[in-house]
Image 1 (tube, rainbow, N blue to C red):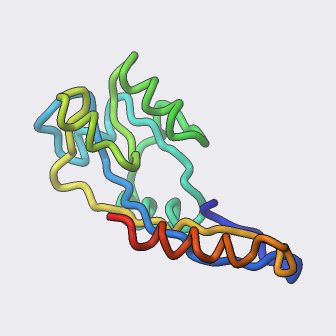
Image 2 (image 1 turned 180 degrees about the horizontal axis):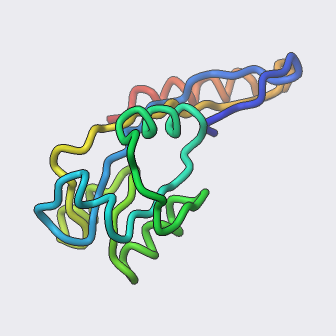
Length: 135
């Protein structure tokens, strides 16, 4: 999860970090051009929204605002436009989407949450170590 709850009943561990990239349905766009027509603002959580606002302080009202990246990806493919999405290497390499070259990369931390007294705590810690070690 991106924004885990802060409570004593749950232990948190950073599982990984993802990079959110601005992509568009057509090549050669600047960030200003990409955010002017068909821009989909995906709400990746408060830290993302703060960074996004810092990078784009005069952004016009987006065409759409969504809370799910997969829905934004589907809409980009159907209607066109641009959005910040994670892990789009496949779509970029196939020419389905194009990187908006000078758009800032916005990182997000991903957290695992689990009960402190759970019987599977050691297994979860080992899974987290393996996840962090994966390329």
